Image 1 (cartoon, rainbow, N blue to C red):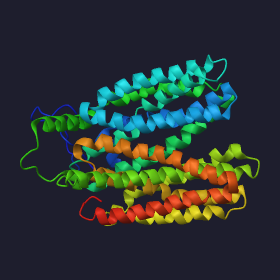
Image 2: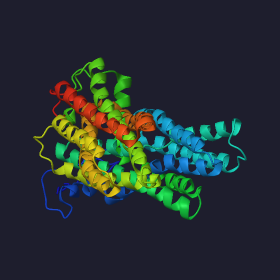
Image 3: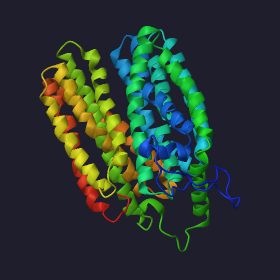
Image 4: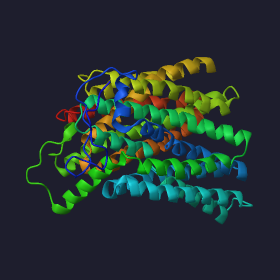
Length: 453
């Protein structure tokens, strides 16, 4: 789609300074359509690494749940372990993003890969060597599970930071295309990860999924950490750190991508909170939908198939996320947020209608069409309002919002399902979609002066 005109490779410039940002002077035919710009910008290896290096994150929660439940014979212990992984990830992700902004992605990701591999090993040892799972033994397992989540490398958010750096001087369509790809990569891995855990645990051994996650982390995350594209994001981190040490520039020019750099601190913070709140609502939708589907399939004596139903929604969501790259630029991102969220709310409410698993499959296929674009859009808005020296922090905050929201949604839908079954639980995903629409309307007003939103 685009042709790069002799960009200096990362680590080199014509003037001996920081690596230059690739430029996209004009369109060119590509068999990949608009997505042809991505391998030109980052190389095919980055697309492959960025996809598979995030797979461990999608395996850890379900892997911990499966292992601890199998070894302890307690669904409660397994649930606590999965919750500890989620809580650790929600708290650790923003810290990792902050450190990446300060010190660069390379060193932070390498250290995180080592620590996460060690934490997974500790969880395996603590679980497999426990004779009982009461008292101190369970506490040790939960502490290890928390450490697994807390140290988990946040590949998706940090990959988005690299795309923002690489498309900094390019048309907005290039970043939209990259974020569409990233949204699809997230969806695919969160479908593939749990499926891989179930397959390996049932056919071979319940410990194998976590062992594979550790192997993938130490190899693929490390390779992602040192990939040549890290020069772009780490250049931004070092520039920002130098600027903060030297004090504010007296006459800073306008930031690329419509970054509202002139906003005051509290105003900027409020703008960042909008997409974060949006991702909490998205997570609430995810968690409540999972719980609703468990209650729904339980009515047919097939509760174990709820994950497969949920994966169906993920597939159409992934395909729809790719379509965002082709949406017209005049369709503002806040407008996209509102339209997608409204459709999500209506489609989620329609989940109350199916009376069979086959009909529910059709409803979920339809619902997924609106989920992927919503996530891509909110990440795009997050990139527009994030301070240029805190991109990693904001992107990981958005990811943490999903994790936190998933816990909220699971809890709320679980309480309703306990008393009223699936018919009561379906209220939560519909309400989450409605909340997303309201947040989108607020964002449309608050961000009307931000060009990229």
